[in-house]
Image (cartoon, rainbow, N blue to C red; front, side, top):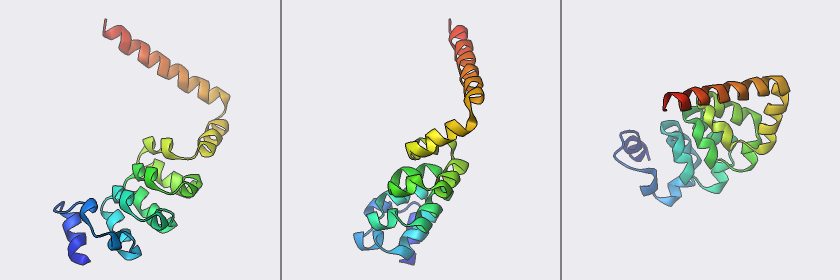
Length: 129
């Protein structure tokens, strides 16, 4: 198992080439997602629903949230760590969390944010003419 993990770490082996029994092994997958959070994509469904494994995966790569179980996409701790690692990861959070964030930010902040985005996109469009 250690040799396979070392090969993953050194990019001499892809997670897709690993024996299926290892993809169901808690200890192996915990180390594999610490190497690369995207390795979560090949984990068994049971391990994709395991809090500790998913947490380690999103700490390493926030975008690994897309491979977590549906249930864990509702977990605030997991989503927070994913977004801290990569803000784009918010798109893989549950809609409930996304709506709560928007609601909590409030109408005024949301309007200011959108106005700034529109202003910036207008500048880009005008500079391309």
